[in-house]
Length: 351
Image 1 (cartoon, one colour):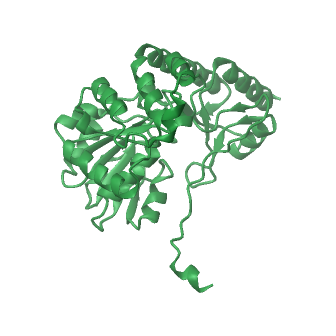
Image 2: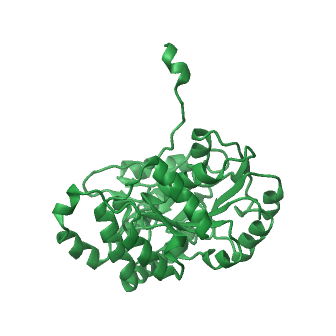
């Protein structure tokens, strides 16, 4: 059909399965296994329903201010969006327009190339080394911007702040985005580098460590000028992206710092215990600093383990892609969920 010649075609991002079965164990989308902070539940029951007939605050100022206070920056340095995916998509649209290729790792969050293709941004993937680490020398070539997660996904490996700064020093003329979706589980944030680099954008999310994936809250912190450019693009696209309940409940989540630290601490302790149990079963993996483990078995193909787990209603993530086809990404669930996973794997591998 003639009209199809002018359609913008895209190969979309493929998210993990979202099954809804009784007694399933869902370890495939890196969601938090614990509920949001208690204050969030209390406030949700008291929400002003009449406020839903009104447009929300387009600046999400209450949430912006509490985030600025928590991270020790000015409100003018904070930008909020509908999950970190929304923030990252806006950043691609705003900052990556030079016509030169944007650089990111070859094994990384698989939305980066989707956005690049969608917005007609040239890109180049830089191969991680044999131990799944970023090679900073790869980011010294001419480029139109740099983006990478730290800790990385799906490997879970965290890079040092020195490496992040080495990449920043080599790329003072372009925007460098550090995607810190998993930083609260053991990574080191690049936020302290904002004082030295006005081209740095640090992106985080409430979906993992703050247990609020269903409310879609993401944010980034950067220089005031950088944030002003992001807002210009957002308000040219859609002024009212973040809904009223997300803004109100997001504030409450940030205020309960004790619960936030307790929850991330539980996940880290479970992750470290499960690492040892997986090693005993013949798995190897990078030393994850995230809320998941990227594991490969010494002798059994990943596809076979994936299908066996799925038949038992235990869901993990598997990609049939170069370099990672023999790996499974296993979200860290509750201790009970991980015990069930290990028990099944023990029977399956040794049986």
